[in-house]
View 1 (cartoon, rainbow, N blue to C red):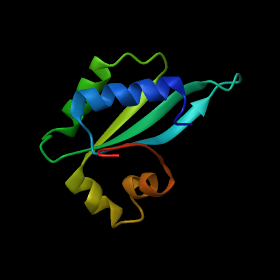
View 2 (view 1 turned 60 degrees about the horizontal axis):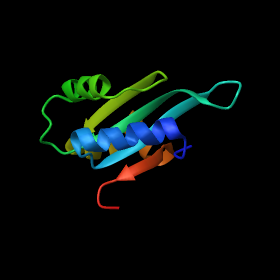
View 3 (view 1 turned 90 degrees about the horizontal axis):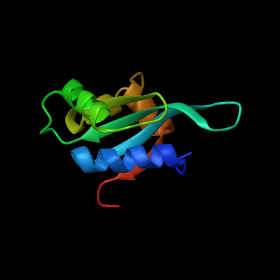
View 4 (view 1 turned 30 degrees about the horizontal axis):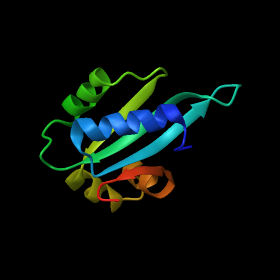
Length: 105
């Protein structure tokens, strides 16, 4: 799924906007032609980002995605805290999501 050109382009644009630590594909849906019709990305950023909702909005405003997409941002502190609880969305993404980008790799 991470080779889809729409998702790949969004990932590259997000890396330029906020220098994330990780980007995961949390979910994606395809249409009857097998093309991505919507998707959700989870972005893990450094603790320097105070308001996650502001960053989510900034990413959506600065990118041009031809299909509906959702952006979910976690600071690394929140992310690490959530990974300890197997009932959190972050835990599920970390275990079942598709890692699209990792800083330094």
